[in-house]
Amino acid sequence: MSRSVSYLNNSEFIIYFDNYSIEEEFEWSDFEEDIKYQLKQIAPSLEGLKEVWDSNEVKIIMENGFCEIGISDYCGLSSVSIRVHQNIEEQSLINLAINWIYKILPKFKNLSKLRKLGTFSNGEGVYERKGA
Image 1 (cartoon, rainbow, N blue to C red):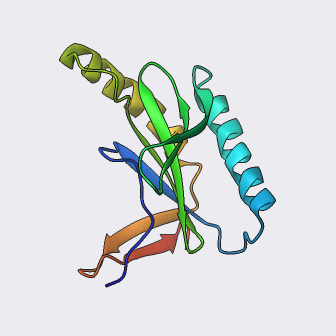
Image 2 (cartoon, helix red, strand yellow):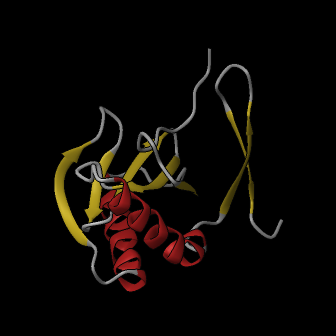
Image 3 (spheres, rainbow, N blue to C red):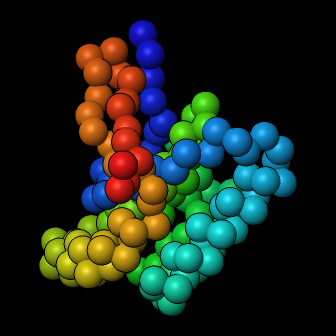
């Protein structure tokens, strides 16, 4: 059985990156810092985190009162996913958080160069480059 890159549980949206050429740990760190910088430009209220994990494969890199943003990599395919902050329990605040996420979503989507087309029954994902 095959598989694809992981993402945050209960994600509202996921974007993908082709990082097949990243071989060194410092190159991955540069990629992660670049993503954080671009996200901060989109939503200045986002704050960076260090070593917070959603699962064994998804690292939460930024958050604010509304959302959490996670990053993952598998065999050169990276995902950046956004979800409602897991500390929010009240439905009215969840709705407010979802509205905030969808407000920044157009700019968030533009960070990615890949579009996911679908997933095979074996779990393997199929992607295309945007504009191709």
